[in-house]
Image (tube, rainbow, N blue to C red):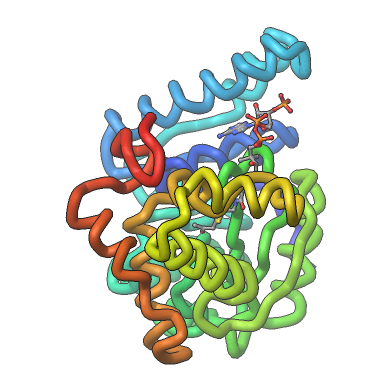
Length: 281
Ligand code: CAA
């Protein structure tokens, strides 16, 4: 098994920032890489804000917050991976982009390093095929919001080795998350099951139910932590439609996105990030 101590996260959006935060909070030094200084400083601010909330709630001290932030090292060059044991890629969800990056990582990262992708739906086997070490490529699917969600879905590509799985399991436990191993079919376990549920919820709104009634029904009658419409607003309507498209390609028309979701996309009602989705923010 590979002993992981040096970690690099590529991509500092919502998911990347959350991943960097939880890794640094667990005592690791973590390098974060993105394509511009602007994106890196935005991520730093986001992580600082999230840690400040923990200070306000007295979950960590100011000193701990400063120590966590000091363990995060920013960089714009992909060369930051040259001494990494584990690289977690969290760039936008485009197969071509990820394939290109994994080809580069394969050249720049040490031979022993594990290359992980935070994709929520794309095939790990296809990403792994861009490298000469497909047995060391794995999916590490963190969930949104990363600091709060307990589980990480680990995806076993067609040729991912057991040693790679074991190392990723151990690392996931070391950052206080619960690992769950899934097979490499589109959407794995979580995105496949969750998006079927979310899409059906959109149909119930099309049938004339209000988003609030749909959410209340699922929260109060089935104990979901939040309703599906609120969750779609959190994840992003565009992301849901995109993932449904990938699921439809793999599994057929049962995953066809509800017309309401497409209409919302056309209107720019993408959820929290655009100020309006099923609800207004
Ligand atoms: N960052 C950090 N902390 C956050 C947070 C965020 N973005 N959002 C909420 N929290 C914290 C709150 O501060 C609060 O902490 P305390 O208990 O210490 O006060 C705690 O989480 C609970 O938050 P709230 O009281 O505001 O609200 P809630 O109880 O409804 O919890 C929630 C919010 C955690 C989002 C919860 O509703 C939930 O678990 N929803 C389901 C989320 C889910 O299914 N995520 C997976 C999405 S799919 C995905 O991620 C896959 C993909 O690839 C697209």
